Amino acid sequence: MSTLSMDASLLAKMFLAGARELSTNKEKINELNVFPVPDGDTGTNMTLTIMSAAKEVLALGEDFDMARLCKAISMGSLRGARGNSGVILSQLLRGFTKEIQENEEIDLPILAVAFNRAVETAYKAVMKPKEGTILTVARGAAEKASELSDKAADIESWADGVIEHAEYVLTQTPELLPVLKQAGVVDSGGEGLVCVLRGARKALLGEAEEFTATDLGGGAGAQASGINRDAVANAEVKYGYCTEFIIMLNHVFNQKVEADFKRYLESIGDSIVCVADEDIVKVHVHTNHPGLAFERGLTLGALTSMKVDNMREEHQERLFKMDGDKYVERPESEMKQDGPAGTANGPIRREAPAAQERDSEPVAAYEEPAPAAKAAASDKPHKEYGFIAVSVGKGFEEIFTNLGVDEIISGGQTMNPSTDDILAAISKVNADTVFMLPNNKNIILAANQAASMTEDKNVIVIPTKTIPQGISALISFMPGSDASENEESMKAAIEEVKTGEVTYSVRDTELDGFIIRANDIMGIGDRGIIAVGEEILGTAFETVYRMVDVNSSLVTIYYGEDVTESEASVLKVKIEEEFPELEIELHEGGEPVYYYIISVE
Image 1 (tube, rainbow, N blue to C red):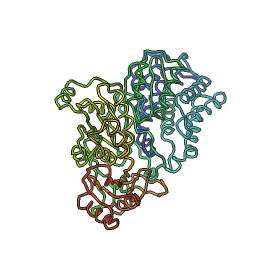
Image 2 (cartoon, rainbow, N blue to C red):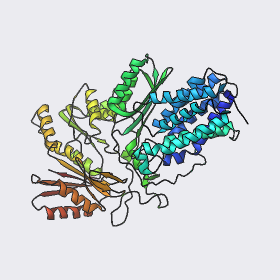
Image 3 (cartoon, helix red, strand yellow):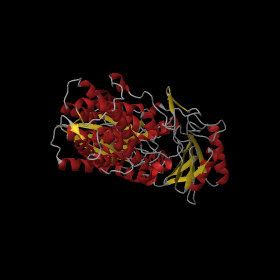
Image 4 (cartoon, helix red, strand yellow):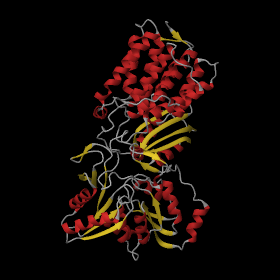
């Protein structure tokens, strides 16, 4: 068999076969995704992206030309793109189809140019391209495509050479990205692209089965990768939300507008991909404030296909499988003691609190509170000052209520409330001035945004980064003072609080001078890791020991939902014996993520 050119019908079969090959291997690709905080699952994201295009191709039926096929692939993949890898794949397809759409037959020279146009388009779409990724594999394939375009006898031999070289480049990705080398894997996005090329080759050789609507479900025949699950990267997550949306343009999107828009996205996040196609723009950004990205997008047109993933939460979910409404440990056949250790009864089973379900879609612009919310606020007696705090855990909620907090927003480390959540709480407080306590560094900017959007009340955000800081700020409030004086005294109070948090490690890493293994117990201070051990009690004590100094007078222990009062009392006694001059208090916190939250003042 010798093919010298291909028409729209053959290209469609090759594209659909590539989609099936990617889908078949999506779990294998997912397992390669071992970065500290996964950006979704690469295999799943790429599969959903290409299947969106495959659906459009199937909808063409049997009577279509190259232009219609190219539009279906380009628009289908752009609208369905998910995650960084999915968006890049869509841009590779977009560039490829842009080059060939006016040809009824495509030969080797056209294919070579199209491969290079695909790479050029994809690189332009990514704000800060990284080598050792899908882009590197795509560029390698394009370079070989050009080299072989005037040497190969036919498209079959050309395809063999291109795929062989792409596979070689894929094996070299760990040499370009140390994070891959440490984990002992190749780039997951690059693996996905190679799968698409392999599938297309099967159709070219007549070895692929007919693609039908049942293939759109994806996932059949998933293969295991056999990688080392324990190997993970030394990297920190700066931005917690993977945010994606499509803008249906009603403004001109020229180069200047695009550049301004990208600069704004870069000011609030990273991993930015922004691509325009006809009358729509596909946006992908990692940010701590999705609502800001949505708001800026709204200045250009209507939004659709909005999606926000909490990447920190997804990393936790990689360690546990859902069983009903509880997180349960994976069987030993699937992992090596994932989850916490160090208790007398073995590893702790952690339930997922209802407050941490993934439903916190950010608000793009403030909407007037519902009548019921306004009524709830007006039914309460009007007062000069009101208080809102972000918290999670029965004990902490009781503490904040007893200290006079009007509204408690459930959230924290694994669930940052949206601007809309904060605005809703503000609308319920019937006060002239509302003090807002975020109690988490990742919530402060959302609180500031909500404050700036509130016109009928004076909202003052006290930048509390921890729950103990929030408690200290409330205790320092002086009813007889004015708002500005209280703001000053509350901010001063939080500077006097040291906070330690005791939890377990979900990965192997080296940080702040400590070698940390998965399941180790860590004590986290205000500026980083301060204690590491194999059991909870000892590590919690070490954390306190490193926080206390000559100016300390009070240690307050808040124990989490996975610690009993009797266990916490043992820690209290141990601290009292070591520091008899200090006052030691013990309270139930009920926090679901940390065994202990400890303050030293």
